[in-house]
Image (cartoon, rainbow, N blue to C red; front, top):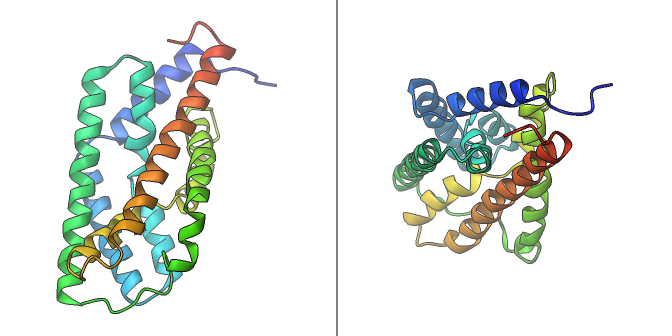
Length: 207
């Protein structure tokens, strides 16, 4: 039974993760399409459509690449990853704001209503475990099949879309969705750190 990751496996997975975090045509098209599908899914109040958008969205990759590049001391790629993530998040915000301007939203009953505001901290804990499993699934051989389920469990894309919508709808949802987005991103990063540090402790040769 395999109990630890080798240096080669770690390096190969890291290179693949950095590649998936680059702002290339694939990343742009997937981000643009996921944003459009998500915001339209929110407009028609369809959970199935929103889940589909969350699966398509590649935003998970740069987030889990941040702790990986920090531990690798790969600061050049770290700066690029953060910049790419900010660019893509801005694209999602602008798309959502534009659609929200064309089709003003009167009410969102599906996500982020006042009833869930007292439980926003749960999103942080969910994100921690999701980030933990996401990094494990990406770096551990033959475990990447779990990434689809992880993408569904992490609420990154919908709150960013709703942030954009809030910009053209009297800021009704701005603060709740901003909180949830930041809690999810920080939780994923923390969970990823835990997994990657665990790999290094299990095999002290990993650098």
